[in-house]
Length: 447
Ligand code: LLP
Image: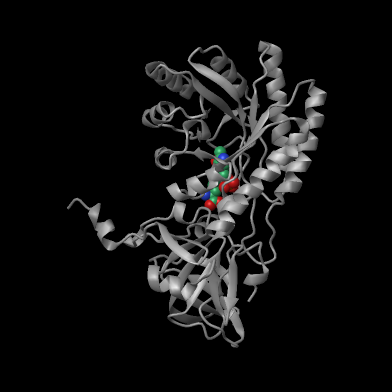
């Protein structure tokens, strides 16, 4: 078993005794007995430590330059009121991208000043809720949105703090669907076409709006940090150009999220302290070359905060050896969830790892594929993994690094009730998102 020794991949507070995995002092057999499977299990102390580590690394790297840094937790990765409170208590603000995330942050008691709102197609209701709660910023994603936010701010009698999301042309990150700053995609205002500058000018001329600064998010699951530097340079250049035209140096630049994590053994997540130190050097040089002071900075990590802190626990059902075209064989191990709790394998070709975690075995390993119970052959959780040849019905499997975009992208496909999230700390567990029941599913059916 690799897990107790591979802290890149497993939550920090995992131990294994006689083949049984425990998380923060509770065994998975006990947790499965109480909460059922599939379940997401969250290591609360690890979540809080990761949040604090990101905050310290990013704040610390820029402090010697006299630059203040805010870290926003990108709540799309996974949000519940408890998670919002935990990360906020560690000094993170909350980035939201739609009504439900915003409402959850508000329900958690997060002050408006510590909340940001994103979205390429925000509704009037979302903007109204955000401005009514006094959010610290709304990130403008299109030209028509300027008028929409302005008119709602005027109705509410407030001045809306806004940033402009800039498409810098930097293409970074994993799969095409999660890269967000190249030209041919839906987010942001293009730097190259002049749309970003036009948005800044319109906002500058609008009394209803307060132009806080510029925003860039280049993509997700980024393991090569070079893209952040490129994007930062582009934004500082635009900021200087705008200052030349208007005399106003916008106070803030947000470099988004996207910090990559490990999903399979041997992978390593981004070293945020090293990345922040590099970026600080680069920004200092760039600002000097431009003859401007550095702006306040912000970042929006989601995956890197929550991803490694959760595992998904499944119960094995059917096990089926399949002979392959090349004469080899693969053991298909079906679990009680699947693409409804982890769409990332199907959607992005994402790689995951799995281990038998409910008993010890001396059986040799075989090439296996962990699949779900949905009516779709693409319903794969882990494409390739070595599992003990005696893996069988009733065994528990754990898939690590599912905290980000697992539960948050979960569906009710085949009308499966969605898995709950169980938070574990100091030998105590509590559901922070209740498992759905068949009654929940039927409750939406109006007959
Ligand atoms: N900020 C903005 C503006 C974003 O659009 C995103 C992610 C983040 C921050 C956080 O990125 P992170 O640090 O979590 O990589 N569902 C996909 C990823 C798409 C994320 C979209 N935006 C996945 O499962 O990989």
